[in-house]
Length: 273
Picture 1 (cartoon, helix red, strand yellow):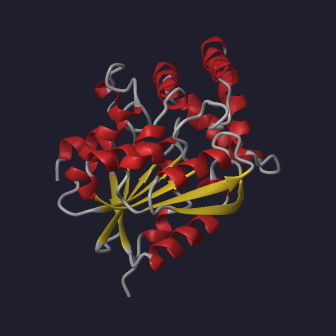
Picture 2: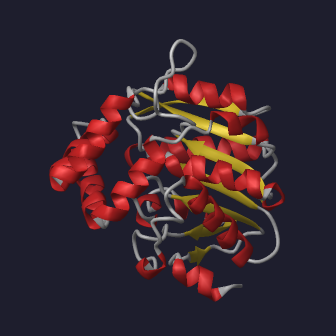
């Protein structure tokens, strides 16, 4: 194992199964956001958690605005992490932008991916009428980025509530807000730009790894139209609608998230015994 890469991304490995699952967080989050889901897989899999450079317990000194100005920089890190783990393929599970990053990584190194599972992904957040509805007008996203510059704390509070969409459980939005606030504002801003102004619709046709797209209800960040577009663009992909509302089902509805992932892996012959 390449210990330098593992240390840079604060990689944590648990479980001892024959197959490896890598869990990737979404924008503004670290590996702790998987704490309600990842342990359920430790009996049957080797479970790998990590932080993006610039978040969580990663090596902040390794952050470069040039490298991480696009999601390709993060995708290259994913490939490096997988290679650092040793030989073999992985099952990659990514939330939101983490799913898109995993998709890009699978195009770079398809031989290292066994399955690709994406929760609330989007290949493009900006509407492109009449053929594509990403959920946002460009002006809306520019205003969101502008809010980060003017009032970062206020931005974190607003976005966490909008993302979570579970008003009856304010602690969930509070946790997400805390995660946003713990991230360096410069890193968060550059990551946000890389995420929300990206357009990877032309990459979908290049995905060769069998994929599952999990689509939440009432997701204002990645609406069903965005998830359906990815499903249509990725040949042979599976599209599942969730009862979970909001954009973070692994936090708000972990039981359903675990069940659907296990059901998919069983159907795909990824479970031993």
